[in-house]
Length: 135
Image (cartoon, rainbow, N blue to C red; front, side):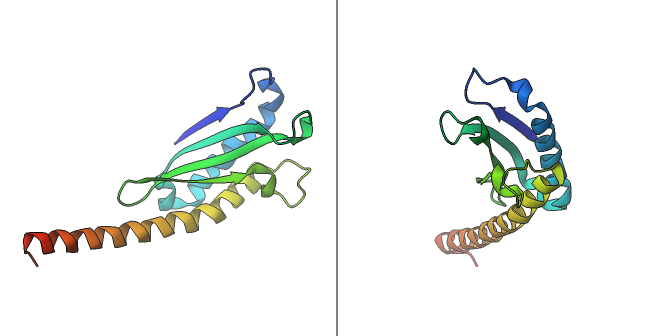
């Protein structure tokens, strides 16, 4: 599993986010564990810190984009706003809240893409058999 960070602005003091970065890393790792076999589909977590309102330090926070592969090896992704991970949007989420949020979203997304990949593979086999005159 790969976790990458993009702080966007070179003037941002990355040290300021040390504790937050640690919570995100633990939350991502816990997500993979909680997803069990479905966690194997995850290839990368990309965390991009963005300024939501220029000039306001309180509105600088991460978006988490998760990349995963479906059953026919197409790369898929889902992006979620860090601020939605806790009921009180002024408090930073814990690693458990991050993992709970990501797990609840990703489990259904990954399963949905596995089903889609399975159906696509079945249709491809049928079309191939038709073209080749095989049953």
